[in-house]
Length: 237
Image (cartoon, rainbow, N blue to C red; front, side):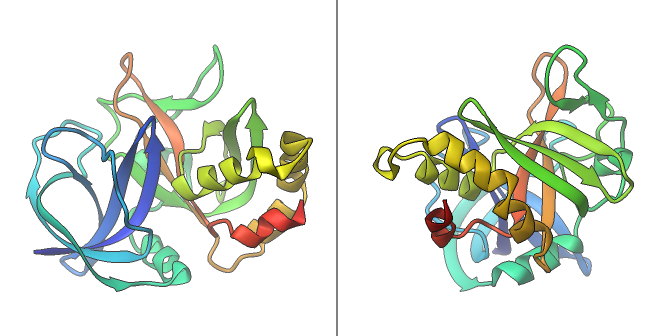
């Protein structure tokens, strides 16, 4: 049985993509547990920081999703790790200070719209962490998007945020029982208090992922943003 520290839970349409860390040869390695018949989970009751025991088998996937492993038995929760410790473990896994280092390939800006992408044949992995000099979230329609500045000074613009906890926070902020001007109030929060809460946090950390190939490219997404949002932040706006 493998012990997997759950580090990412992302929304992919109606389902969830999950990534965890396992220790292999004294290194922390990202692993994406998937069901035997799909790439995502329609139900995943666990949370980031949970350590789950499960049985995994290699999956003959294609680049860049080399982290895929099929779950043949599991999951059993056996421990919980605090958020700050999870971020610390992620810093010991796949990381980069530059755009090219994220997936060991060139990153291209979408000249005809928003976002950025990598070519599947060039990317050597599909998940990577990074420290940011600056980060901004904004609501575009009802979609949360991120722009971030890496340690190298390079900029990633207009990435979709797929982090389950942050999307749940946005859903809660926009709930009908929250009264009038909900989107405007959330936008003000993201432009003010949010920045201080995130950038001043000692365990601030970001993970960027790649989508499955779509029309011959893999799009970049913001998979994880630490710190995770707190329910009491909703009382501030």
